[in-house]
Image (cartoon, rainbow, N blue to C red; front, side):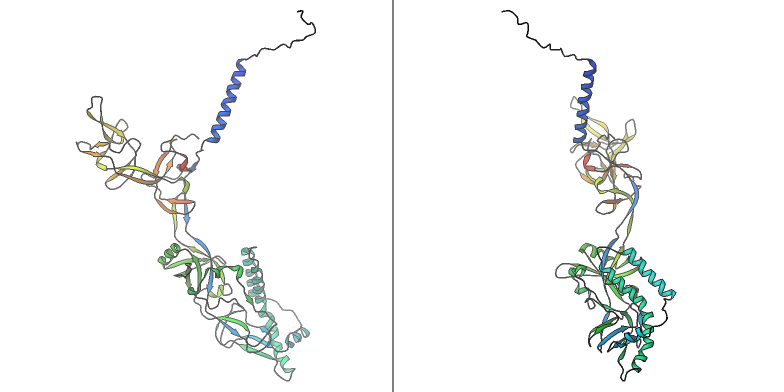
Length: 464
């Protein structure tokens, strides 16, 4: 059959492989393998040991308990206060007046003249209140804005009411009868113009619900407010002794009670004081601690909830993360079976072994000492086995290795491999531990340790 001259056959070019393509392909495969191994391998991260401290200090929100007496009004009308909130009043001092008709306020407005000004002392105190509020304001506790408002009003109350007091006689003289009644303190104490239902609480009355500020209500008494006979108008805190109650767990309560007295920092003004400790656990199992003081009550007389910090002992040493801590087993042997030998003069034991003829021979085996007591050494278990016999130097006495013990430590990587170092923990919280420094078999400052002990094995080489 004749060939078809119109048929076109495609020419298939031969595959040309050169050395460059082979090298490129090999490198590409190697890179892919390295990338896969990188993501599948646990990475060992080092941590530089530094000196530091962990404070066991704790911040709590406490409830202030004071000796408080609520005073009720004996008259009805419009009330105006003359004693400043937070100041001590003596028996017989004027606290407030009751205007039966409200004419006193109208009379003052009609006859108002001149300007009132704050004294330097009042102005300084007002600035302090504003600064304290600005620094400690929390947007989640917006009710503090109203407390601040009442505190500022109390600061200027004294100046305004002194002007009002000069007009009381004028109003009474202008009427046939006395329309304004002056009310005086029957006891001495600190004047407070609010109630909240916590006045009669004791440590034994404490419940967890009382610490919930969302349900807390504070009733403020304000000027020119219409009151009825028998309504509460102010309260007196009559005793300088007071306490702050905090809620804690049983272990913390036991620790605080054991201390008897705890130094407390008040976060509001950074002052410190020592409080006597008492604890109580209610029927629901909630534990509370009372810290009692004999001074500074007047500073916090208007505060029911007070933020405090307990200044407990502070431990100093080498600061390491808890993730680096590991527990490891060791053989424990008597000190008299450990000697120095070999070319390096390092510590080791005389291990009994058997040669090819079945005869017992003694071989010096180097081993690392990780801890010691008065009579024993903790030895590495990687070169020794349970049941091995070691020989006492210059003697024929044998000792069968069997006793074991565990040590708490970290993996030191200064030499490029995971070397166990025993640690003595002084204090520990959820993230870090403070360990004793300058121990014979322990850590030193600036040593490098494995950050996560679970990522390495003992004596594993570290590639960084």
